[in-house]
Image (tube, rainbow, N blue to C red; front, side):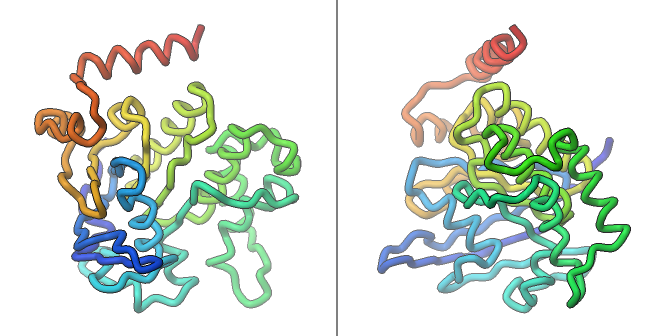
Length: 266
């Protein structure tokens, strides 16, 4: 299926200072529709800060963040919170686990679309049911989140993002604490979003996952983007070895992915 690889979100010259420390220094890049973009780099390089700035949870000291739709471009600073939430969704790495049912949590994804009464319409209920089904969590829609396993709970949070139905989806290390089976399952599910022409930006720390599921990578170091490109292009630059201190080839990565997949299915 052909995908529209036009820009969904672009950011230019972003600078962010937190607690008197410069975290992002003149960061520029884009997220494209129909792609999964992986954001990689050593701990403390600014990956999470970048995601939080892109969804306006952190205010940038300078620079611009623009949403692109058709011929129109919108600075996110000009959008009301609900309007922004209809266009950009974000799943943080650390979050509270409320004592509510899975279905109730997924319904929270529809809040940006609700009126003052916050009453769900028939359309909202249909979107929620479809999100539960797509994420594979319909069977325990009525179970409470604390009773679910880590993998099940993560899929429920992802279903909430599916219900929010935004053009831009941001995730901060969503595979953390999951076993190999659930990591691959979750990444495969995220990959289906690009078929819906969404732009997915995801912080990852595992190179095999990034090289198997991401169409493009942004490599960060010391608050800056060092390089961007396809996984194959970036392997040729030597930056992967420089940033992570490992020697990699496409064959080595393919073998590691194959080994993990065999373990999953054995």
